[in-house]
Image 1 (cartoon, rainbow, N blue to C red):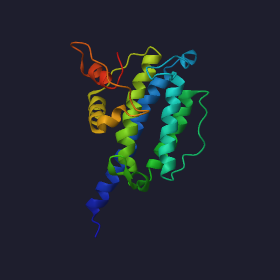
Image 2: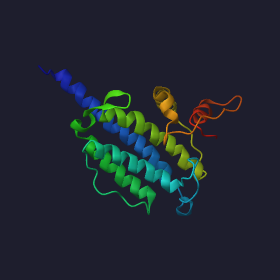
Image 3: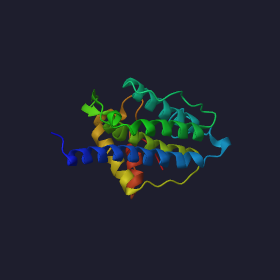
Image 4: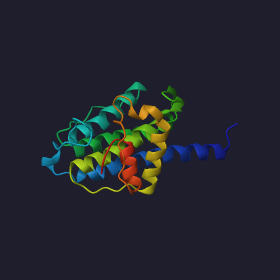
Length: 194
């Protein structure tokens, strides 16, 4: 028998998923909104990717993830204006997450049984925060992670284990400079230098 507290906790979890996705996606969007048009072709810390291609990577990997779970996000937005493309994509994902059945959809993932919502926040949330720094670095924006973002990134990176350095994830870690702060140490672990 379902109780009112069960319904409330399920609803809260769904609302939390949607709001957490929006928060992470909006943080990425804020950096994109500050990129001058002529800087989209700037090289990013991701080898062989421009700032524009980083945005394309995030959109395409999230679209592939949802498509793989038979969730249609509509037409892929054009990257002619990457900031606008991200806003269209972010809105499409957020609207799908408003349906509780989307986030709670279960499947067997790389690390075992999981849900669409858990994977979206754990892996794709990690990606949105990491690549926010990449776009900022490519376009000369100063970016500091919050403690919550550092917690998310460190937990995710530790949880990935050796898969963190698999094909298409992160390049091998680099040594952080002596006296490096928490953000610099995290970035070094992800193969990036401040």
